[in-house]
Amino acid sequence: MFDTQSEEMVMEQAAATGVGEEMVVKQDFEVVGEVRRFVRLVSGQWGMDDFVPCLVASELVTNALRHASEEDGDVTLRLGRTEDDALWIEVQDGTCELPHVHEPDMVSEVGRGLLIVEQLSRCWGVRPLANSAGKIVFAVLDRP
Image 1 (cartoon, rainbow, N blue to C red):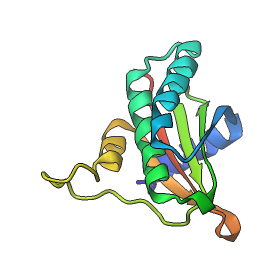
Image 2: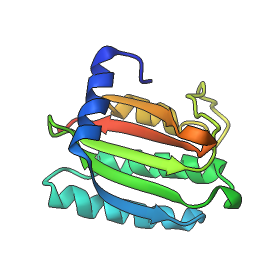
Image 3: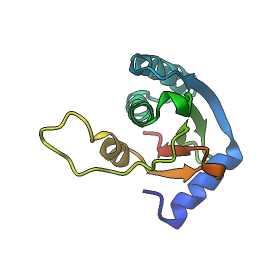
């Protein structure tokens, strides 16, 4: 998770570079396929392979949809590039509940998403929003 000085620098670089593309995701798990199509489109425009970005984005969006309620509003996916040309993925939702990596359970069908994100990302983390307005979960992916 976000805990080293180099990860802080990446976060600052991404914020300075700005987020390039955005998609509002309705509260419906069926829309995750649309999320992957959106990520494929943007990755292709930026000349990047799309497999890992699609997987990480769909895991982050699925997590947000699973834990946010209708009252929390829609989920927003943003994609951008850092100064060193890594891919910045962030998902914003209206719940203040912070995500965490679970120990793998061999029986459960859920609970592995952030473990996958952690393994495939340079770094990932959470930024709570002011006034209990929710949070942003982000991941930074290096170009292969």
